[in-house]
Image (cartoon, rainbow, N blue to C red; front, side):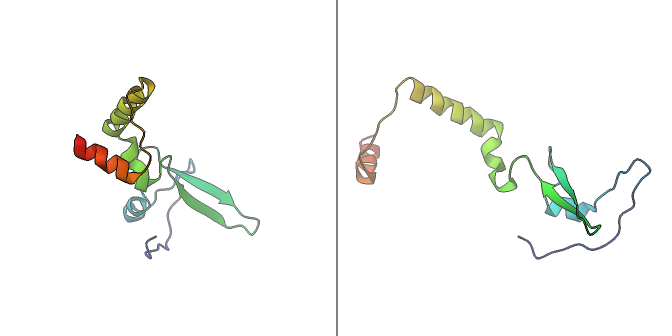
Length: 99
């Protein structure tokens, strides 16, 4: 995780809205679709905010439409029995050489 940190003040609007600084939102990936902030009120009066992403930013590539198309393609091959099972890595590599 980044060693960068933020300390400062943000205004609270009449409806309870707050705006996080742009740099903070970007660094914590809160500018991504579906991002949320978990809010915890502690007994000592401290309000904790934690970024909550529906998909971990490091795994977002897996959920792109192109990757999911490829996953469905593989699922179709498996369902149709178009697979080859190898006993070990050498057997797999030999199969690739034959292709």
